[in-house]
Image (tube, rainbow, N blue to C red; front, side, top):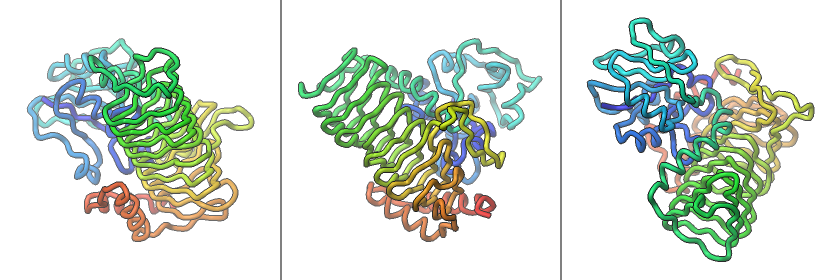
Length: 398
């Protein structure tokens, strides 16, 4: 028996984040969706994703019986229980749309099946809350729910490492959990608005002000004087400073200096230059529109607050100013005065004064050096993945 997290055709609407990972590998909270499913089910978990991603994100070995689950479904206990209760030939439906199939043999749900339940399967309606990530901004919108779920899962029955008396904890101290090897010093941690989780070998430097729900991933650093408003999730291997509000960083990315990041999502291996600022609110207080790659147009998020979405390996120079709802593609390099365009395609170079192609060889060289600093090699699988994204996004660069 196995869990297969199926992109369900929604990966296109989650680009640029899903150019380089399946939907189920996204991290809305402490854990990736796949890790959360594995911890809750103790079953092998894999991915049903694009062919070029399968080498890095494989499916588990063949299983006679498997549950194909929409990869962007947040695994709450109620949802997991309903999925595990499925029998072969059944489909679990929430609000008229499938969220999971129980299949045996070689049957595979089509993209259309994820929109309309097939008539030959027995339909079971899930009446609980089904939280689905289908657009990039859903990551920061659902971050708080994911953090609360992950916190409960990771800390149940365990004791937190103690922190020194030079820190101030506001709220319930039981909602602060500090893993072994983590350091927290001379900071204010407020759990009255949600739990705070500090992962193994992470560090909260002196003078930080943190309001939950908040997570700091393994080996990550919250630099001196940082101000963080939850819900915010920082993945592993990051350095974060300045002011951050309701944002999600997938991992191995830096926003190490002053500047504001709000209602935003950063991929992996990103770097924001000193004093980079994101606008997350229009002067008109109207809804923010965001570029959609499959629709090749700006789409209405329905949100008043929406900042930056940045794909993996993207960078920006010092004093960069991002407008509301800016989307920066994979391996883009943004710099220069003024506001850059709201849509910066993958593998582009420049800013407000114009964009040119970021040559593949140069981009791979930068990626290799950045990853090497974290002790990670840019291997052949990663190179082939980025080469595919470079070719696939060529039309966006005109």
